[in-house]
Image 1: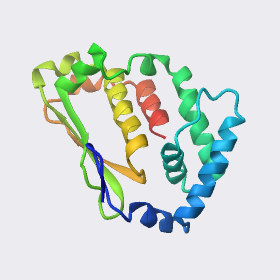
Image 2 (image 1 turned 90 degrees about the vertical axis):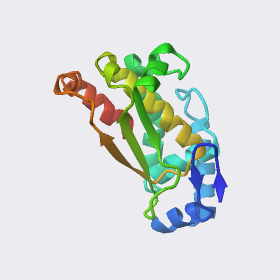
Image 3 (image 1 turned 60 degrees about the horizontal axis):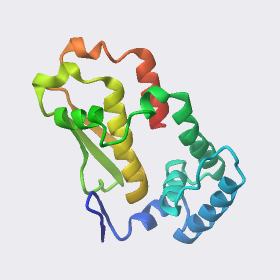
Length: 187
C-alpha cells in the first residue's frame, strides 16, 4: 500500500479504477504520453503537468482523451477567469490560515470501497464563522484538491458537511454567482 503523509492509496487502486473504464494501467500510461505531447503543443498552457496529475485528469474524465484535453485547458483557463478566487490561495497567506483556524475540511485517509474520497467539513470555531469569506473557503478547498491532484488517485468525491455553527445569515453570502464559480472550479 502506498501511503503519503496525507492519504492512503491501496496497491490495487489504479488497477481497479482502470478496469472500471475498461482500461489497463499500460493503456493509461500510453494516454498520458499522448496528453503530455498535446500539452507541449499548446502555447497558451503555462506548464506541462506531471504524469500523475495528467493521469488523474484522465481518470476524472472517464479516460476520454478529448474530455481530458478540455479539462486540462479549463484547469488553466479558470485561473484567469476567476482571479478573485485564485489570486490569494497560497496556504501561507493570512486569509487561508484564518480559514484553517475556523473550519476543519479534510479528506478521510482511506477511499470508500467504490473508490471515492470522503471529505468532511465542520466548523472548528463558531465564534469566527461570520468573518469567513466564501472565496477564501473555496481557495482553501482548491489547495486541498491541488494536493490530491499530485498525491492521490482521483475517481470521485463524497462531501459531508456538518453545518452546526453556520447560521442562515451566513448562507446569504453564498450568492448564485459564487455557487456557479464553485461548480465551475469543481468540474
